Amino acid sequence: MKVDIEIVKKIREKTSASVIECKKALEEAEGDAEKALEILKKRGLLISQKKAHRETKEGLIGAYIHTNGKVGVLIEVNTESDFVARNEEFKELVKNLTLQIAASDPKWVDKESVPQDILEQEKQMYREQFKDKPPAVIEKIVEGKMEEFYKANVLLEQPFIKDENITVKEYINSKIAKLGENIRVRRFVKYELGE
Image 1 (cartoon, one colour):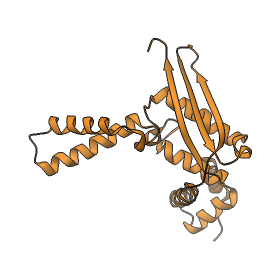
Image 2 (tube, rainbow, N blue to C red):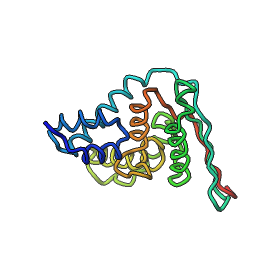
Image 3 (cartoon, rainbow, N blue to C red):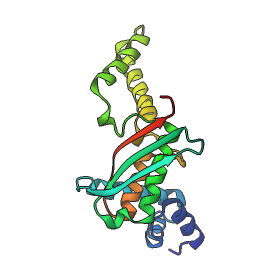
């Protein structure tokens, strides 16, 4: 099957995957650009899952100070080698993550970082709000409300500010697939004047 080079270019712009990978995905999707994007997304996820157990001892500390000087962010993002840590793509990832934190104000890196007592407190609050409903319905509501809580408070679960169609975790996974190394947000802090 002959693929349209313009479609390959558009897919490459959206995913940052290599031309060859974009072409293969487009061929596999029989020319359907949306299916090709899904294929590339799945491949990126598989690659990131394979690399998830690998140690990350290199990386960068990123910083962002908002133009008004009233908001600042520090972040530590780790990777496997200093070679990748010096890569422009990795530096851009770190910069984008500082912007994400400044704009979206997450409290924790991942779901596992949220203290158990806070989770229980949130769940209890929702159960109390909807106590008139049947128990099975209450648990469904609590589940949905907790997903909203994670999206608002957990960095990796938030919609990525530069592409609302993906989460921060999916954005990082795409960079893992492209750079070929595990990448992990270790910690961050956001400062706001007067807080």
